[in-house]
Length: 221
Image 1 (tube, rainbow, N blue to C red):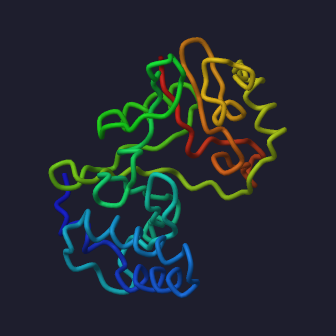
Image 2: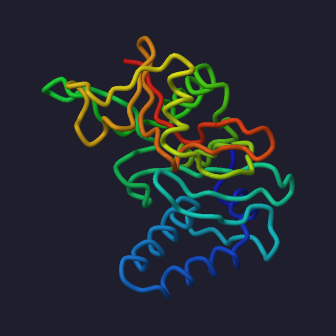
């Protein structure tokens, strides 16, 4: 377990400040994005002083469920910081999982820290590529996940569909028990479901031409 102060000292503070300023300067909805990024990092770390210029972890982006950091020491992995809803991470919790509502429709539910780790373990089993649990921050206020960096570009939807079908996944685009807004990017293989399978959550490697899932919501129902 890392204390907030221990992780804070590994974060490149000036780089984070520049990213917050860059987003805020764009105006409009970007001001909110800048505020969310600041809350996600600083509130999770209890406003501990951040590290100096060139510290190990440099912020890349704040998207979806996490803040992404580049590991400047290894230069081959991305860290994902997830945390509590009240610290700016929204209603996904530590990462969305799947569940059924009162009508029996499959949709997203907020996951706990333990469920976020379970989701990654399931993704490893089903796809052979996912995040590893790097550490827990404080008394469960933050979760650090590490993922190997894949240099490449986003595959097309056709390539994603071919990949999923080749690996035995069944499209749920016509499934009546899946919420309509989620159907186009939902798949099932046995009792395991893989949602959010769109272009932003896969990458096609330049090195080997293979498609890798980088942020799917994989869960068993």
